[in-house]
Image 1 (spheres, rainbow, N blue to C red):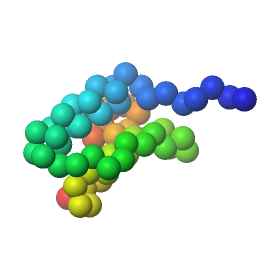
Image 2: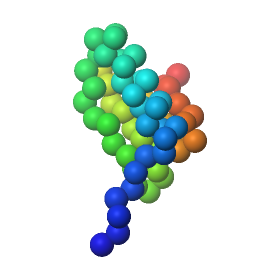
Image 3: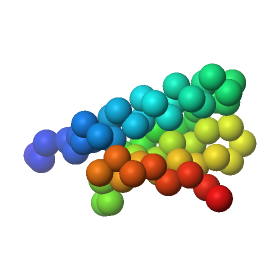
Length: 63
């Protein structure tokens, strides 16, 4: 059995920061998921807001 994939420290910091900002806007956070194929973190918030955090900490907001 392989060990579970863990987020990088940059991803962890950005995930906390993004979740904090989203809750300050009173948006529900429906899902936070670490994709084991790409190592990206996906955050699903509000009606249809999807935020992606790459392993280097780069945050991709929808345009």
